[in-house]
Image (cartoon, rainbow, N blue to C red; front, side):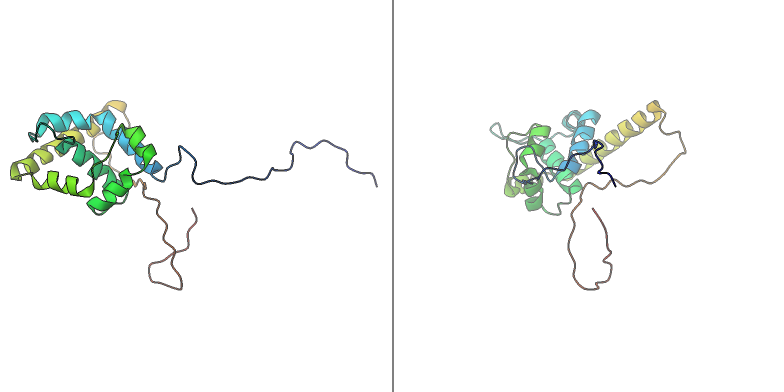
Length: 175
């Protein structure tokens, strides 16, 4: 029996060392397309045009900024202002969004508490304008025709919680 001397197209894999502390890594990567989508829709312009909310001359953050951060924080799975701030503590997400700093939860709460009923109505108008822009883009692109409706889900919160035993509602899954 002769020895196999044929060259292989594959070489042994080198040892790989994993690091979870390198620069440019983020746990909020699923939120980045939502940031780009809101920017392409002109979220800030629509909010600034339709929401008449004045803050002091020395205020760093506007209501538009607060709504933007809170909306994306909720998309990422936050259910409180403290968790919204935790989402935005990610340096990569801040860099992609253009934020130099992020307000703390008490600042966000103070901004929202300053709002009145008329600001809620103005936020509804912003919602209608943005939805109109989305439908306009869909119809212009030919991706959808009037009357064509379907349901799709975009999962940006890929949090996995470990469960032990046989708990109701728990299922085996793979990431």
